[in-house]
Image 1 (cartoon, one colour):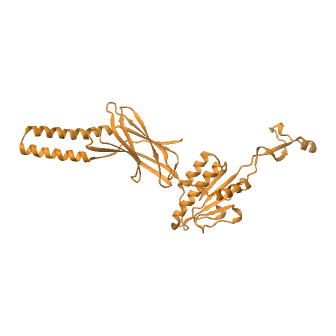
Image 2 (cartoon, one colour; image 1 turned 180 degrees about the horizontal axis):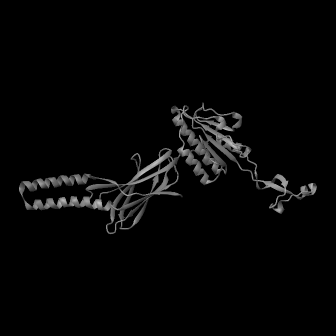
Image 3 (cartoon, helix red, strand yellow; image 1 turned 90 degrees about the horizontal axis):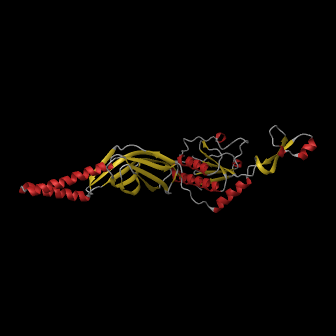
Length: 363
């Protein structure tokens, strides 16, 4: 799994009294008032000890959180509404002072905390610990993480000291992948089988006969044709039939169709996932972005990243001249089956004879 790593030094901090600390502070005030009114040295001694406890508590929490190194590990792509593994590495760079009772959480740019409940009870000097948690983004797009929050109530629980370590990162979040209706997958698969691409390559079927060229394998010579024409003729084989599909996602939709547009993007992601699992060679067209054909898990991640970052365009801003759209390719690169996914029923498309399937989310 590819990881993205970011780290920075702490910049801001905060401290607040806990409920126990508030009660103890009121008790200190009460003892101080009694000492002033009575003039008893024992009360002054008790007051000084209680104030010392407060000071030591604040200083110990401050020292415990200082000189920490934070490293965040994230996958290259997340999926909306699905937990993804993430990790925070906390290293104590102090030489003599350990850290105790650390509470760690990740913070997004919107000040939302992720991975709550991460606790590190003891971190010796010079040691590091890995804290794993499940990161579950709520919507697709670009998830921006801004900082890592580390707090402690060590040693007496009177103060809750917090330090924020800036650690900016941005990870694309793909739309959620949902199960597709069986009838839809059946029609798409049948269409793909009918639109197999026949190309030159290694195989057993005859593709073409041509004149021998220097460097050709002598085992490919077609002796019957050679004897008939008195010229060296080689036999080219046809590559095993492969299923290709082009998924075209229309970005054109008015503001009232925002939810339908997100459904369309999720449907396109589901098609990518299911067709990849079937061994299809896929190409994705989303607005002006056109990916090359490819297959396998790495290509699937690239297509999902495109879907994660695509944005809806209103009918007044998007320009879609059908003849200039990247969906129309030269004959040298056939596209196989073509599937159009649109959220707005009035999206202009070219001659329907050029398409295989149009999935209209609105209807």
